[in-house]
Length: 477
Image (cartoon, rainbow, N blue to C red):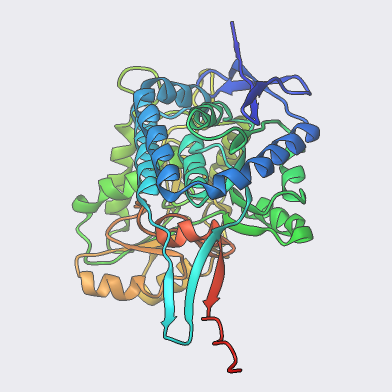
């Protein structure tokens, strides 16, 4: 029997006004749970609840907010196995990776609980005191995607709460359940209305972006949707943090020891079955090592155990949804039709669910869809180059600018080339590494604003400059 879930609005669990929709297990292609379909009226009530709670929550001391987040982290840790198994069912990743997602959520929550919000003294003289303060924005809406549903919700919600904001969370309709559980955990430790969650298949996202009662939106998703968010948010000049698409390039320099880097490059490309914004998605390899690295990557791909995330020994799960599976298949088929060499994989598996094996493709170049478009799935194109400057030019030719990396034995040279990547993050001899205390964000069409670190926390505040002057002395009689 499928379990029904509920919305959380103003501290109350409520069914959706518009009934329920199915949540599909990508390992079977069949529904395993039902999620409430909220209405625009319920969104209004969630925003009103957040607005009503804002006065109390922004007035809470920093210590009170930090203590609440610490208790949330404790509860997540206690319930980690249940949460991880729920992620596997709705998202598809192997259980070990789902546990890592929960552990990451705990780490980011504890980091948010440890952060101090600075007050900068600009001038301190007998004539005046000038300080820069950071005040909470108000009501923050979080719109999250389906690839890391729990972790990205943590990234959005925890710094917002730490800064004194109230939140309305809207997860992807493909993976809503772990976010609902996260919000239920948070609600145990904050006043009613501080955290709310609304879910639905259609219409709620656009209702959020145009809602006059929402002060800020933090959105992770596609560039096209991010542009729509930006346009719709103009009505009340919402603050925005947009982490959008990425088509990250990596350049492997000619001096690179292939045996030493192949595993790390594979993991960076196929993290979460390639369904990660900052995953390595285009690999530029010098012609002298092109075949060697391609074969090494294919050997690693063939060793992966593909299957349902709850099966013992599985290292590689399904694609999350049928539409994404269709896109991956289409891109590989297009490359094959243009003469590409598929070293391994390249065909959907003949079983229930949305399974596509890790796929290595050679003989492709810029101008082909598999290289130019973000595949966001388990396939990696390798592009040969002869001149490093040309490889750098091609890596930077994308409209995206989330991340990029350079790999090589000469670290000084690799850093010098990485400095010229047009990306929000540049890695040397690694890729897709993130941590709570370092800001992360893209440039170009990959969005603006940052998450994590002090800069990420301050994205959820508005600056207030405060002048204090002594009263004038009484006039002499």
